[in-house]
Structure formats: C-alpha cells, structure tokens
Amino acid sequence: MTRAAPRNPIVMIPSRLASTRLPGKPLADIAGEPMIVRVWRKAVAASVGPVVVACGDREIAAAIAAAGGRAVLTEPELPTGSDRIAAALAALDPLRRHDAVINVQGDLPALDPAAVRLAAEGLADPAIDIATLGAVILDPAALADTAVNKVVAGFADPAGWARAVYFSKAVVPWGDGPYYEHIGLYAYRREALERFVSLPQGVLERRERLEQLRALEDGMAMAVALIEPARLGVQVDTPADLARARALLGGG
Image (cartoon, rainbow, N blue to C red; front, side):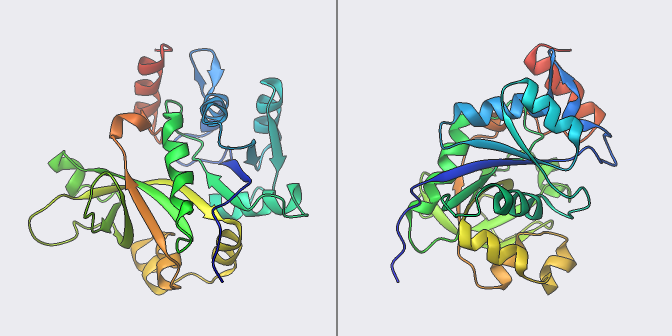
C-alpha cells in the first residue's frame, strides 16, 4: 500500500521535572520565561501544526497554560519522551485525526523553528517511517565524547536526505569522511510511533543505550537530514548549559 505524505501533523513536546543533572529543568527561568515556554513558542513559530506539551507534572502544565498554550498530563513514571507523547496523543486524539507527530525536545530554548519544519518534511517520502536530524561534527573533542550520539548515514548529497544505518556513542564509521552528530528531534508517522512504543527493547538498544536503535532493529525506515548546529542553539542538560542559554537569550 502506497502511503501519502502526512496531511495533519501535530507537534508534541515531552517534559517532566525529574532530572538528575538539572532538577526542575523545564521551569528554569531564561530571560523571564520558563524554558519549556520558550521551547513551546519556537515550536508554534514553526507553523507545522498544533503544539501540545506532554508533561508528567502539573507545574509544567500550569506554566504552559499561563502562556496561552495547551498541555496534556501523562503518568509521571513513563520511561521515555516517546512513551509520553504516545500516551498524550492517544488521550488527546482518540479519533486519530493527526496522522504524524513531530517530537521536539523540551530542552532546546533557542531552537530554530525551521528545524522542526525540516524534520516534518522527511515524511514526504512514503517509504520513511521516522525522520530525524543530524549535524556534521567539526570538533575532535565532540567526536570522542560518548555523550555525543553519532548517526551513520551515507549522504550522496549533503543537502538532501539519507537513510539512517546505525546510531552509536562510538566513533563510526571507519575511514576518511565526515561524522555526524544525531539530533534527537523526530517526525513519526502516527502508526510508526505506536509501533515503536509497543516494541520491546532491542539488543543493540540495550547495549548502546540508544532508544532509536529499537526502530532500526525492527526494520523501520529512518531518514536523516543535516542542519547547521547553530540552528539548535544550546541543549540544556546541566547548570553550565543553562548558563550558556541564559547568556545567549539575554537572561544571564
């Protein structure tokens, strides 16, 4: 069966207060606004579809409501952002009006809205189940850093899309050529998201501790497009990252 490009996507931002490295991260103040509100505004500016925050905490829902947005409460103990958006979507849209979901991480307060649009465009190819983003790694220290997740994809044209072949914390592939950092912003066909969260953890997923390998191990087709790292701004995981975000956005 030939699949059409999604006609009615929704953007969802999973968020929860529990964070080992930066407790209360979504509500951290950046230039007078909670971080999650800033991310919500960036997602709205992408004009891809309605934007909903899927959250495990009433405090986050209240912050989004105060800014004029919509939030859906989910069980706090859901293990991943993918589980959280799948649960929120099932509650929000039982009639299945939305045929695609763009998952935007809640810790990207300076995200370029164009990156959200680009991820959504990856589902125009009927063969693709999930689209995601990457960026060329230019810093040797980042290449060696196991906290920087790598994606292996063979780009015949760096301005186009390529199939994701593998994800790793290691330096892969071997040989001369560019290396790519994986950027965890995903566009799922709805049925692909539902299939993904229903699967057991894969062998390689457990070994690498990378959730996206579950999709590849199950035979799902993932596409990757490259963006400039500056279009992400700062991904806030630690107090030092938060300080950089505040300096970038005028709150430091």
